[in-house]
Image (cartoon, rainbow, N blue to C red):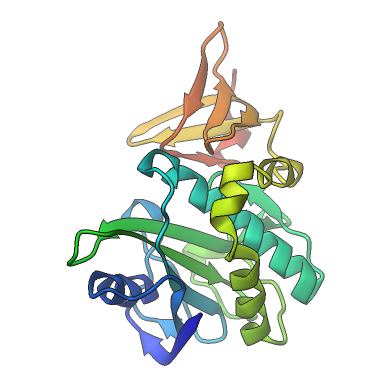
Length: 239
């Protein structure tokens, strides 16, 4: 594993993506103390003040493209395990890419795929964890918090070690039971957000390919492979 450290970057994902395009090898990892234009899923910004853990690593999967959707939940399991090992904190997993503590977000994960100049595929896996007691902007105070960590470098190392055998983990499906165990929302009402549409349903299960099985009532059971869920909006759901 090749780690590259920066005091500040606009986005670790962007820097790692550019390196991958030029042929960077698997687990070429970009780490920044802060990001000025950190990105989350669905083109959202990711608040990245100094003191947190922000890194992106290059993956060179040989598994079929149809299985790329499993990389994000496998990464969530890797982060969860590493947090337990390094900090002793047991978080909750929220489909598909967030970790929560007491119902508030502490970690986001962003996976982006592409091909390099030789036509070879890659995936950039970005991880952002709030590990410092910063003052969140007003719009985040009710939805985000932090997990205390005395050694961010150790946490990054532990996550990468957990992630190293990701293809074997995906092939064997060994991530799934762990993921389900820490999905506190299973069996509960969730708000499903897909574009401008918000629907309420009961989260039944997480499937082997990473999809979320949701019962929208009246026999309408769907397997979701896109969009996101909100537990906060679910408080206003009626089904």
